[in-house]
Length: 163
Image (tube, rainbow, N blue to C red; front, side, top):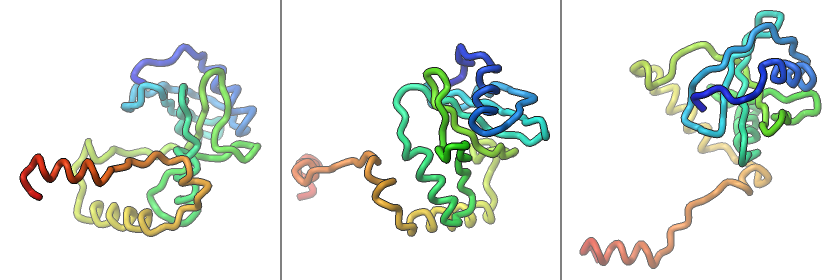
C-alpha cells in the first residue's frame, strides 16, 4: 500500500504494547510494496531497537506467517520470520487489520543493487535448503496449487504441431 491507511499511529503503538510489550517511541509509514492490501511501518521501541510492522487487511493466509517461521526455526538462514506476540500467535488483531511484527533489517534489496557472486551463491544455498525442507502438512494444507490437466497439455501440443 503506497498510501498510509486511515489508522492512527497511536492505535498501532497501543496494539504493539498490549500484544508484544513494546513501548513505541517512533512510527514511520513506509510507502513500499506491491500488495495493495498491506501497509508497512518502521517502528522504533523505547530501547531504540527498530522493528518492521505489516498491517494486512482483507484476506489473510496464515501460511504467509507460519511458513517463514517454520523455515527460520529449522535454521534456514536469510528467512525473516515474524515475531510471536504474548499469546504465541504470529499476528494480532487491530481494527480491520492483522498486525504482523518483524525485526527490522537495514539494507537494500536485489532490485536496487547488483548481487555479487557471493550473494548469488548464498541465495542459491538458501533456496536449496528451503526446497529440501520437509514442511508439515498443517502448514502446506492451505497453500494454493496450480493444477494442469493432461488434456490441456495435449491440446497445446496439437496446436503447436509437436505431437
